[in-house]
Length: 425
Image (cartoon, rainbow, N blue to C red; front, top):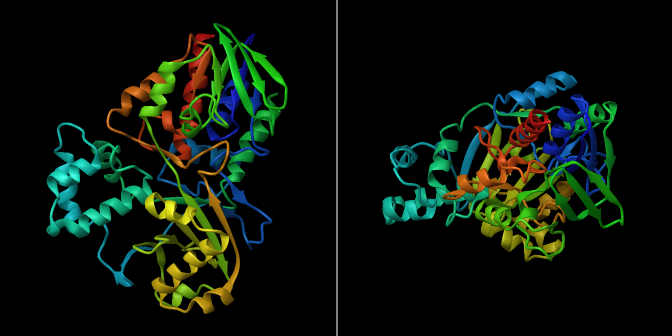
């Protein structure tokens, strides 16, 4: 092909676009700000843990055709996630299913909603008062913790659509998600793609059929088409702020569209202990949702592992961010001590290694993943439109399908943009 394609970002979306376009004969150059591929996929190897550990994306959320198809092509196995989901309030374990009881009434009311409103406004209207206090707390914890939403902005209809699908089988990738990343990277290299790592992009100069990418290293890359796969968190940064992209000429309608979409953040903590002490409390623990300062934890069940993972979002994340390193470790251990009714001193003795990953502080990511706001469909539609068939945007936030805010969404978005470019060339 006569076109040279520039891709900003070597995450799942950028790699998938490069894979598709290079397979069609295009010359493809990928410019990545960090020193590695993967973006929000980050599997830790040789970091003191006894096995690969996921600091970023961890789960395949259902029977997702693109992700599972690539894993099959790469010969990478995966296994189902199992285990009980338990709630703990004030140290008391609640065996009731999270989605039973008042949740049935909640889902029925959400499904009958005619005009979309924020989930906060929805709860205030239909589930106010002491009668639904526990339900409101559960909805807030699940929406903020799992979906990373701001309840004042998050779409009730979008959450309803997603929560209807809860219960579908999830999977973990054997050896970590990075195996899929490296498979795609290797396939792209074999097809002639060029990668430039540790090369942050500062400015995109463009006109129809021509782009020039100015990088912090002083290098400039030129081409005929550009695909930006930077995170929504980067697109939402105002021009002039650190890590923001400059466009010349500027693209105010696209900036506004990005601002109207939702993007949440999270801190993920990995803690490996000398033994799976939690099994003394209960066998088969999968996920724990609690009201502790570090509220959400999960095991590697059904795998044999001494690893516990903490997931900290919303107000709990902001409180955690205010702590120093010693305070963060202490918050994790104190929360576990309450959940499992053990001494903090015991946990300190049992702790082998740990790692804390604050995705808001990742300079070229600035958050976790997207969520649907009221009216964000129109904003997403704007970002899915190319700039004069020259600049395209891709990423998990721009996917329109059943697997929002996932690796599957990112892969699909990159594939969709590649197909548009191929169709127009």
